[in-house]
Image 1: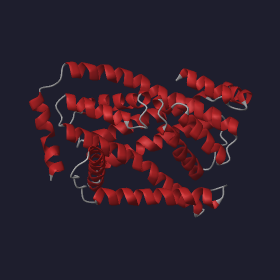
Image 2: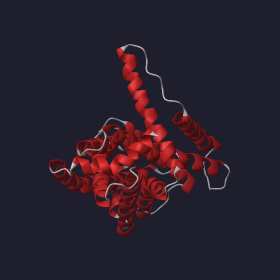
Image 3: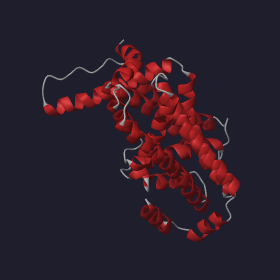
Image 4: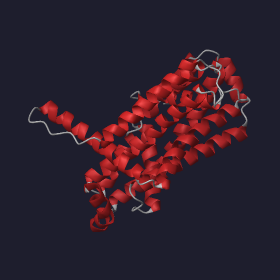
Length: 324
């Protein structure tokens, strides 16, 4: 990660301007960025706790949520590495494997859905001039249309009937298993959202919103000058598509995607590069630090797991609800 960051910095134009911005950064705004990042991490923990109907103790949800976010930094899986790790841990301590995987898939889909809703809302409101804008209409309308189509398609997919198992063929069975898993996660996501659990909605929104706020604070630390709020949300959301590159923590892809989108929306490259690089220190560093301590606790729990009958009894109601 350090080598990738150094290569990225050295390859960017306007290095002298970036150094000057770092030397004159406002420490109070940087502290605010760190606080916002911590609030984002706690939002994820809230969403995790709610996805499992709050049956696990809050402290265990906190440890598991922090460990999952640490795994997201280390595992190159486009943000799915943390939920996959969490499902593995819960399965090891006695939670039914299907339940752990399905609910974590729902957690990943719900937290990801917030991004698409934000793109749709920011793009639409900016296109209608309800939010200030300084770019062409296609730069805001097209992302809104794309996000709207994705949201409708995801909801329709979640409400559709489960796929039928194919009669034969190894590849067909493999595709059926993958499709069934994604479909089950989508159905569970729709069912959870229908319950309108305020903690789930707050947690998923806070996970996204406070991370956006963290980047906004970094922009302020370097003197402001970022785009208007609607454009800022679009650049942030679309730029994070670079995180899907198969590198730990999305290093390289995320920075390039964010800097590229902010520059495309009119931000000076020096300001965009300095702000994104500083923001990534918080986005990667804080989950790695807190996740490392949480992973030690997870290791202790796996070595000394609670009695399986207690775990099975605690999650029995959730299993029954999912079967119904």
